[in-house]
Length: 416
Image (cartoon, rainbow, N blue to C red; front, top):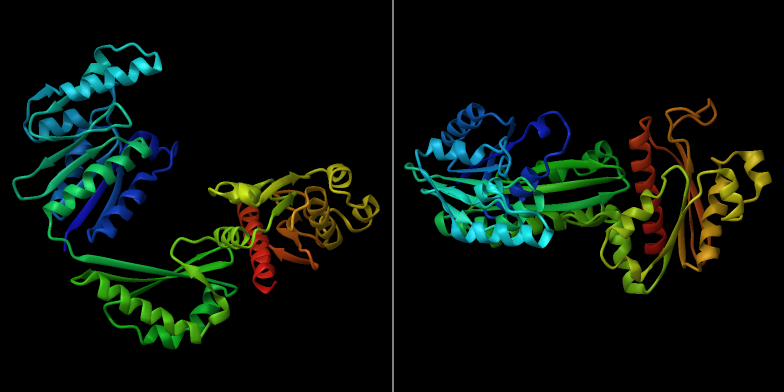
């Protein structure tokens, strides 16, 4: 089994200024190729810490991937630290130098000695050409047969280097066995109830298969994993057979596989049927609309969204009866229904989603505590509404309410 360690460098990660997404992306690439990620660690911009962490990683991993600490400024020290570790002098790579010069000229930035320094690389490394940035990647080979790979911290630059340079080289260098992961998406059953329903199936799983429950708002993913398999295709087929048995146990709760989100499932249905969608949001503040418009192809069905936060906006834009707002409150079934019907009417959409609730931390009452959300879906045939208690934290409430509302739409589309 080939093991890997991922090291992300940067004080900005440790102080919470940015979120490390690089290690997650690198892990997906490595696992997909049969390389098991043994450890991920984030460290600061200190040469001694980089050196100590690298030496420790090489004791247990054949592959070490480092991101960050590469650039034109003095605090970008990874390259110089690696040159010292591998006891290697440095030279100017002509191709990198010309690439940096050209990129800067296009941006109207002068080429100075700091920029030229990015073309300086250790003699002992293989340069991984970075077509999308100025800092090249570097590939080092150790005396014990391992590899150390240094990549820029900019996510899209790192991603391209992983795809174009790193993964082909790793596959050519190591005799890799397969790590197989398959994920089923379920909806409508909380994690504890789901576990109870499929307990007998889980107990019968082979020892070489690991099951993980991955819950999120109104969805639980079931991931089956098998590591270090000689025949990846045969293993995938066997895992598919194991999942097939769940169709006899929870057929109505299975909604898809792998990374599909509920909005992606709705997206596919709307596109295939040629239907359109609009949104009217109060407490979710446009979150539902953004989940759909973030997907390529949403323009085929998404007509528009209204964030009607104020009562007057609900009345003047969506046509909600103001007397109903005064009598029942903005957070009520009748207001949610009218919001959905109103945005469907003014946009001409086939389907519409609406949310109105109390996201907190203030504004709640004994009758309607923080987290109370009414949501509605208006269809060509009917309007349905539902109230859900969506938590107590503002971000959690917005996230959960958005998920619940999209699931309502999914159910209406499936039953139509």
